[in-house]
Length: 393
Image (cartoon, rainbow, N blue to C red; front, side, top):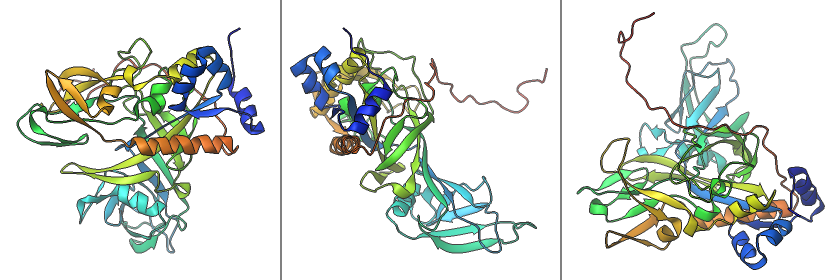
């Protein structure tokens, strides 16, 4: 008889302390030992994780009102501009925003992580002044404890898959995929592979709006589909997409986060980014779910893409498995090419283990999606439209 489980049943087992929780790496050996049917009965939750650069990240902050009050129109945090076109004392700080005096060596990601670590942040704000907000400038310091709200809101995190990058040109390229040496001297990639959340639930059966997650050391949630979300893509027979596909928009309380699981980064001659740690628990609802969760690096593929053209549509040079990428070299046209991960496998393992511990200690239960994501067949591209090009009908 086929095993079927529900979120409610699994949560009850978590509350009773009887749930069997393993990581996405551990489940592979369990399936090999017990077989799919027995493993489906035995395991209740599989924890997945990733820790890599996620540029589309940032934080909403509410500073609190001064006396007399000010409606901030321009805001600097440690000389990093934040967007203040929200309300009187609200602002959004993007992770990739750079400092006015230190350039890419210090940016929004650094400010966010300095806030999380408890450091004082220099706040400077100006305003034209109004009758209800007469103050025109303020120069002070804030901490995560002094502000009313501070929450991470990341529009695009946790790519389901992503291409491996290389460079066939004769010059060095400095990119968000790291430094790409000339003449295809290296291949860079960024994923936790068989540990990565969306690769373990390729059709997003258990991940949607409202899903409870581990976000930078604190409980968080999936708020929406991530920007550049795509589901109707080429897939392997096991359902795993080849190259980029779905993404997640995530939210969580910055005040509860830990710099053990979120860190600023500077990419040489490119800019500032932020490493974000995300863990997602996936319930073993049935045999099909278990088979997805037992996916191995040798069965997860991505494209090798040439970044040297400078155009959006980059040439695809070949296809490679994450087992090959993880080995440290890839054979391409008779050459042994070194490979380098941008994401941290050791940190992803740490996050998966920590989330497993939270569940085992009854500190974390699963949240069934409030709403599942729809299917998206294509992404729009920006086309230039000039004034007067189209006549009003």
